[in-house]
Length: 95
Image (tube, rainbow, N blue to C red; front, side, top):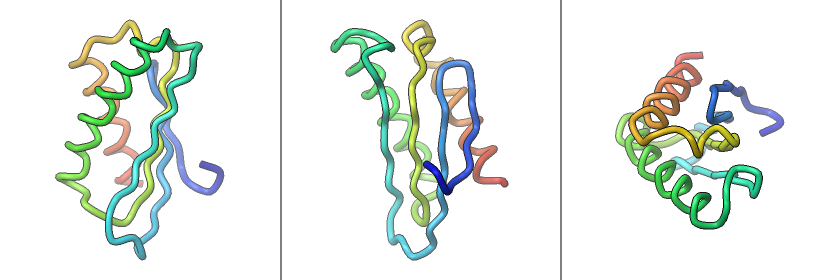
């Protein structure tokens, strides 16, 4: 997170670090207690994992990506969260 690039949205902050030596993509998720209770945090993590699978389809290797959920993430519906993460991740990949 310290050496990569980041982009912030209303519900998430996405960090990207490129590493061409990696043979696969690696993802990390940060969903703290300030976001929601245990059930809400798990729901957000499941959604972020599903969105990450879509990113792997277009960018299969060579990067580490960390997605930090902000408290506003609990208010976002699936489509809105998906759109924000995919848009912000593509912006990072194009940098």
